[in-house]
Image (cartoon, rainbow, N blue to C red):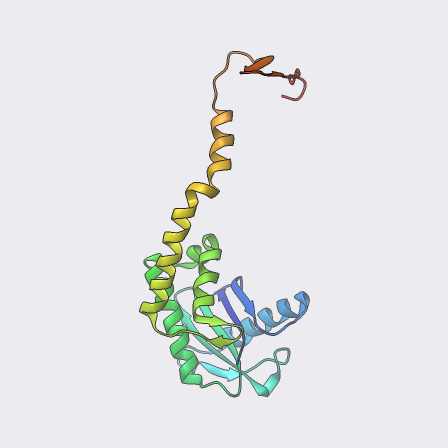
Length: 193
């Protein structure tokens, strides 16, 4: 089972942190730091598997990672998971990100965190692998994007209404508004403006 998925840059700044085992916030931060130091001190020509750190469970857990450009993708797994299977899963996750963001970079993970989490949830949920077929994952993400665009008209309506009211160019604020039988007295709001 996958215990945690960590993505951090070459300087140790976490860009994606997802734990599937409950840890207090301070322990999570210590795990991220310890994992970064364990992975960073390894040479590039050494294998991508190592024993888990003392905080994540020691020898019962493995850290499996890949280094792409400025990002480390680290999966913390228990001993029942296949190292090569997890390496392949990391590759699928990165290639899916690359397809969705067209040449993914660190900034995509920062500015599109919600989409990155959605992609991750299509691949792994609750520590279990759901899908490894990249075409199926991309199809689900495209369907989600179409749904968001269709709902964008409704969910964006309040923001558009506020924007339209702000852009009304009135020479002065009306004091009385008459709509049919309805009379509305507008209080003097100049003290609040």
